[in-house]
Image (cartoon, rainbow over all chains, first blue to last red; front, top):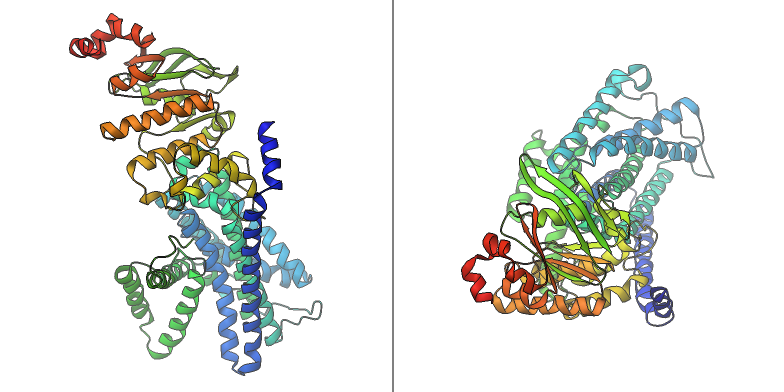
Length: 344
Length: 251
């Protein structure tokens, strides 16, 4: 009872300050998101290049995927090698629903997320009990399972040919996704919203629960945290956002291919995180842009794409020992004379 | 009141806890001593749920804790600190406290609000104050000195407002002077919070000086319980643990 009184007293006195500050930070994030969307929205009017818009759409798909992977890798310390399965699941789920049922796009979107939720709860319930390398390998195993299901269930998925014949994209509330500009805006909106949601997740009390689990899961359980449940929750949330990335991808290519669910997609997610860095929220987004630029330029110049990419990864992993954003943030703080003691 | 009844646990053929029965009255301060491998840490691990007892009961105000999970037991009011400071290296002292209070208030899963929650602040502040960490609130835990990390570990247990606080060697790895400062802090905390404190300690001088009651464990069994004077005079204890030399010195 005394505690309750103390709480009440605190609420009426000094506490609003802390609350007001965190509210301000949230508004700041929303503001940044709106500004970012505004910048992206002006691009089509400034440049008439279709390739640029394509690039941004691909960045949206992979950015959501890679940032959601960082929720697991960077914030919770769960290195998933199978995160790409949810990217593939999003693409196939959405494509199949649109092809087979012809429901409106928003319904298919929600339906795909529901399917992803169910599948990720089942896979997560098995995987998140495992530690480190075992978690990594079992997630990889599930990825391969899903990939081979897609290959062998040809009557549904089209096997190694993928979902062909295009994904119908009927107009909804005035949005026509067969129109390139419309698709561009929707992708950007999904990207910005997704990032904002993830930002909220990592800055929420739950986000700090994840950090505690990453730092010391044993201790976390001794302050009353149900580690398994928290891990499963973030596994599912990350899967939903990866799935959203897959949906964007399937809209972009108007189809879905087995490669979307192959382990190399998960590998690319890990690469992106290594490139951009896992200690900042936007690191994976920076990594996505870097990887896609590399991808586009190097494949144009040489067929030995893998070698070049490998060298770049080695440079980041062995040379810098961190991602680009980690490096930038450290450099910035050193310049400021280490005024702030921490970055996140 | 914490009551341990007929607690048993063995690893292979080794009995780490052999029919331990003990009562810890509310607000008592008890030291657990015993030679290395006596089962002191195992005893703590059994109470806190890190290990499942083979048999026996652990009653906290009559509710059996045996076999429950650590989070569940913590929520019932048994907090613990570890022999090797167990903290969250990348969080600051302040964040650690705020997050721990949030977890205790069952708000560890809150997604729609921002960290830190206003209602966690006062208790976090209080715990930092008590353990003298308030001045180091913005330090990242990994950069704290060994002693401060131990304090932070204790603060993590204390901030949950436990009914029973188990401290596994709060002075481990400290120099003599630091030891005394730490133990004074523990004593002060016990007096102030009026909670049940059980601590493991190797330094006999400390134990005899501050603990009103002492439990001696040996090979997983209770060798003796009693006041410092009783323990000092107990022939079994002298024989098994204190040794004649130390005995003479202690008297």
